[in-house]
Each structure stands twice: as C-alpha cells, then as structure tokens.
Image 1 (cartoon, rainbow, N blue to C red):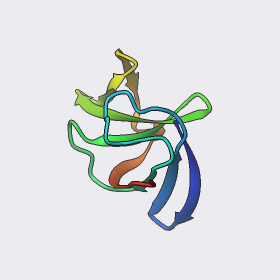
Image 2 (cartoon, one colour; image 1 turned 60 degrees about the vertical axis):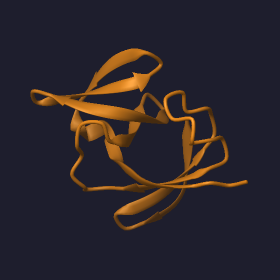
Image 3 (tube, rainbow, N blue to C red; image 1 turned 45 degrees about the vertical axis):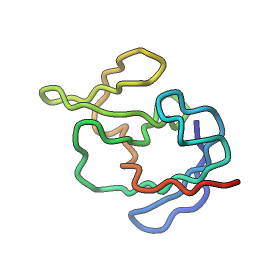
Image 4 (cartoon, rainbow, N blue to C red; image 1 turned 120 degrees about the horizontal axis):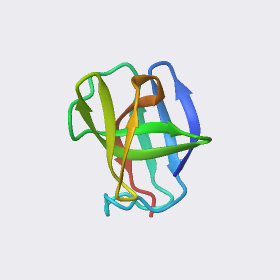
Length: 94
C-alpha cells in the first residue's frame, strides 16, 4: 500500500503505491503523514505492518486488541506492536 519516504522523529511520510479501497480521496502517488506515539481512537486511519507491507486501514479497539476494518472486507485481529502510527494528513499529488 505504501513505501516509507522520509522519517523525522515521531513522524514519517508514506507514498501511496496502490489503491486505498475504503478512502476514495487517497489516490496512488499521494503522500501520507503518519505520527507515531499518538492516541488512536476507534475509526482512525492507521498505518499497519502486515507481513512485509505497510497498509492503511481504519481501526477499532475490541477489549485489549485492535481489529482492522475496511481492509479487503476482511476483519484482521492485530496487536498494537504492528501499528506504525496514525494518519494525520494526506498531501495530494496531482
């Protein structure tokens, strides 16, 4: 879904390399600003490490775990170590 461009302390940018199925306003080629170490609320869009890829997904906390929603119509149970950060800005590249 994305590849890391630049890292600066608690923030980093991702370049979107594939279609984001649940968020039409995020397009291939856009840059995403992700903040680490921030409070994540239900419904936030987060960057998550799945296998060898970084994906963007909405998140929901269930008991002591998180589930990803809107990712390929499959609910994926993850722990907080796989969450890279919260998406805070989309920079549209025309």
